[in-house]
Length: 166
Image (tube, rainbow, N blue to C red):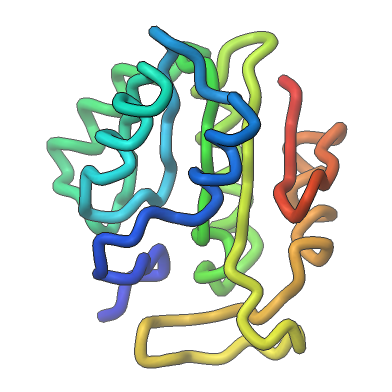
């Protein structure tokens, strides 16, 4: 069936990366874990070219079991500097699975690391429904904060991105 972590199959990198690169959040030599990053490596190239940072994609629905197992081993226990979760929470229908993604982020990010979450807001009505590209929650970024705070109590919103200082 359709992946709950569906990312558009075009090679468009999540716009959040552009915003975050402008804010200089990715540093030379640092590692970012991109949860739900899809099947393409264009974000890897973007972070390497623009910031000298390494991007690793973890995506249970768009990457092989072997790839995800390798990544999990690489990152778990607080090994990455930053985590991005772009356009992922909005395609997960139920809260427990959103929490699972957030807990993966918490496990991977090192002390004093940061987590950045962006969502596609759809029509912003809050009426979730299936689309040709999988489920869409159609919620505003503010609507996700309470769920995120179950895992990261200090999460806040800055310019339409949820920011967490670990």
